[in-house]
Length: 132
Image 1 (tube, rainbow, N blue to C red):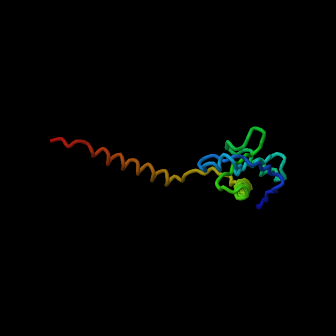
Image 2: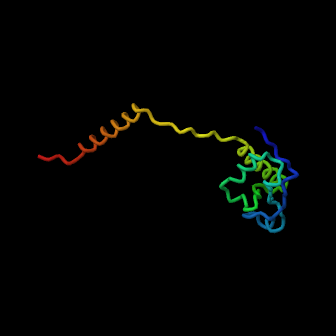
């Protein structure tokens, strides 16, 4: 299922970037905070639920996903990067996970496993000291 992000639902704000950059880093706000309210978005309910269940520190208690983009020295490139990363997260949440069906090992596979363990134990038992 392909779900597209509506850029109007993302609140982008320019902030000062961290790291090296000399005087430029103190003067120019070129990093971007992208805030995306999952509950108020137009995404399908199943995608919203999977996004909210992410075990991720970027999702707040209120259901707002916060991304920080500061790879580039250009504000426009950082905005594009933040939107692209948000789209990747939404695409990952749009994939319905396969349910795991519980299965039992066959009796012959259990026997092979136990025979292998017995054989390995016998090999290790023969590693002892040689007595005269």
